[in-house]
Amino acid sequence: MENKMYQVSTLQALALGYSRAVINVEELIHNGDTGLGTFEDVNGEMIVMDGHCYRADQSGCVTEVDTTTGVPFAAVAKFNGEQKFEMEHMSDIESIRTELTRKIEERFGLNSMHIVRIDGEFEKVDARSEAPYRSHHISLKEILGKTQEAFVFENIRGSLVGVYFPDYMDGINMPGWHLHFLSEDRLKGGHVFDVSLLKGKAKVDKITNIYINLPKEAAFDTYSLKQDLHDEIKSVE
Image 1: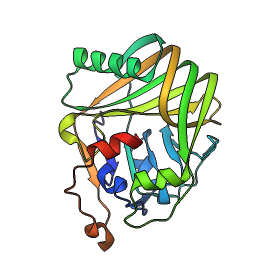
Image 2: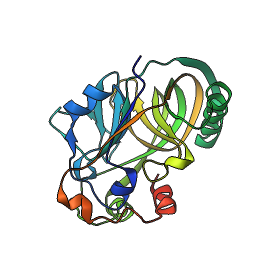
Image 3: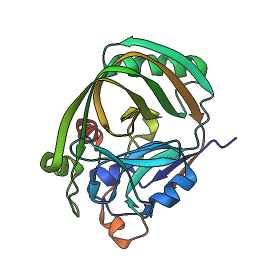
């Protein structure tokens, strides 16, 4: 059974403004069928599900992207859904994160990576996405300040796709749960700020290996990845 997180670049590099393509979507989905990320020049939010790669634009409208599309940052895995459990009456994103953390601590432990998919009925999903912004050494926080748009979906069926990274992997990715949404009809989605779940079914995999595909361009080495960006990353996640 495949048990590997395939990650493109690091979240710290993206936070500092490295948004050039490292690989394309074809290579990404060869290495994982479920996950999340963004596209070259931070051109929208990425949701990978069932081996298809979708882009939510700045209005929350979703399209499946061409396999030649560039990817600067993403985390995907080949999803098996080895642990399953029901969830209902979760009033906000913190209650969902708390319940997911409780379940993985109970069944797996918190020192490994995890990937989750929750299919269900949602009362409300507060989300965001963004328009592309070509940059070099301009922080993600500054870019999102220029390009980010927020939107709300109400009474909608769909899926949350998310990844969990333990605290000691801070900088490689964001510690805790990072969730994106995709509607059942594959027409709406985005990065999730808050969410109210009426009822749903969660599937979780424990991931114990990681492969990180770092940028090959010389420009990558002009970024100082020694900085403590935890608070800045948290502010945009």
